[in-house]
Length: 337
Length: 198
Image 1 (cartoon, rainbow over the protein chains, first blue to last red):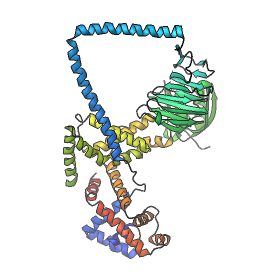
Image 2 (cartoon, each protein chain N blue to C red; image 1 turned 45 degrees about the horizontal axis):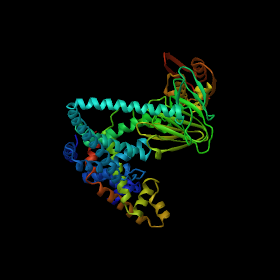
Image 3 (cartoon, rainbow over the protein chains, first blue to last red; image 1 turned 180 degrees about the horizontal axis):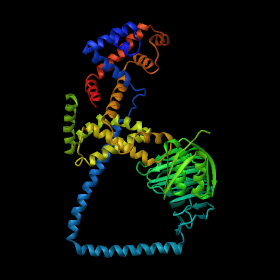
Image 4 (cartoon, rainbow over the protein chains, first blue to last red; image 1 turned 90 degrees about the horizontal axis):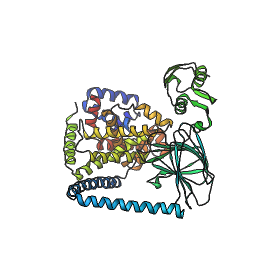
């Protein structure tokens, strides 16, 4: 077998090679050994196995399985309670009356508090509808709301925190105030800042994207602050509801704020990226052929229509444009400079 | 057709899964401990992040436990686990919509909906087992094997580099491959037959 190993490792002399190759033809046992050794040799992976903590993982699983079992037994209890309750309809009616009374008293208390003591602040909502809207908050922070977006904010901020809620997309310019951080609740995430400029988008289902233009922000799932990611200038964080996690990347797009500035910029950007950004900006479904994917575009489009943009691209790379409603297919392409 | 060893493995795994179905947490723990490390490494190759990979596999094991009554194993438990891990990773990547190039590439490699081939994860499993074997080799033996295998160095070059004789290099190489073959001897014949047949 030693000779066989030398053979497989490429160390056999010509004479040894001949000898072994002859043996491989005649001896089935040797052939089997050779196959196995070759399989080991060929498949030996360069990367080592990453160690995982199976014990800890199993504890996690047990905890979760335990929870789901507990939930089930809770459901069963709830069902039996229902059965009992049916028999106690009269008691239920009275309890309802009591609940309504309690609620009424609670509301009275709240209203009293707000109007007479003025401690609790009234919550305001601003929705942009079909146009882009500019807001200035009481603390001097400027917010640009993209179309179809809503910002909820208090008329007066609390003493040690400034908190707002965003649905949709907005660009924030936050005034720095010592010891009064600004927190944006967006989908299932929170973004915590002191003073910066950045863009927040919840337009895509189950994702929240934060792109920082200046300063520093902390971005984390609302329920898991320890999973926070610190983003600085030029960085982008993407939160996925599925994994409940923020992934940090370089912001490769120059067009994060295009919805605000109406200016599309590309610098040596591959066409598949260009297509994606055009899709986001114009709300289209552009696909590019394989041959075009690596064509690189450097261009500026200021307040141009899709047709004008496509015409330019078509001219530059000899592209054929097929248009069917929102679906646009770009084919052909000659990228030699 | 898979050879006997494979069939036996599948059969005992089916029994194991049958116990899982009957709420046997001990049996489930056994399944988990057998496959967790390997599935994590498999997921890692796709999602390129250790923590995410582990989360995906843990989620999968939670889901399987919840749905243990409904799950029908059409082939082996192993195929099922690898297939499900594969799909969940793809779903995760798609969800990210992070347009980093490597992920676009990873997505391009595996079209969605395309079932994962047994061959693919069997090869992966083999690689994992070899890697584990290499990890267990004595340090010098491992180093020499790696120099020869990955850096493509000749025995003579390795000998010079390590300040030992060519004969020692040769002996260490023989030792390395003998140990690896010995460790994999129950596994290799069935696998090779399987890979040849499909």
